[in-house]
Image 1: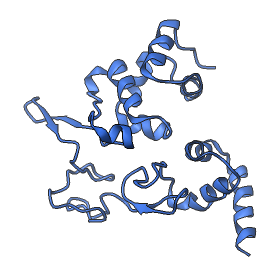
Image 2: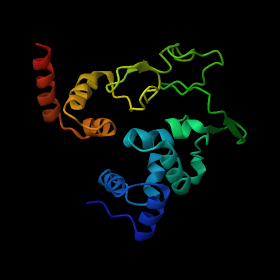
Image 3: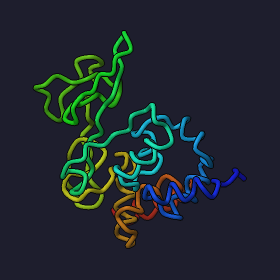
Length: 202
């Protein structure tokens, strides 16, 4: 059993916007103190671990826990209306901070910055793979790049588990609960769900 957050840490994380359930999930993952966030290291990793976490809340948590990461979220209308791209903060070879605007696009495979004329679906000129894979939303059926659906805001699940997510939606599971539920499912639970998917297709 991992150690718990201290009372002060819990109060700070609540003030940053985390719920009791989210605090408990962090503890279950082995994150039980400010120093543990150093292992996570960046905003995208925290959001991959907790896809239902609001991006602005995640940024506030990392800004407190790992100040050097500069996990800043663009404070624009996009934050209120849906997921916003974080400002990428890097350092050049001389150690100077280089801040790229929130409309910069980086390859999900090699992190290479895409050219200004980039459009969703283009191949990365550095590694040759699709910079932002086009995913289909399990909730509304729309397709698009990135990690979140631009139509309904649902976090995308992997293509291999899309049918499972659709089945959970039909079972009445809440939109924001489906991705974390799939992550927590054991292989036997997924196999049983796949059996239902196959029977539904017959």
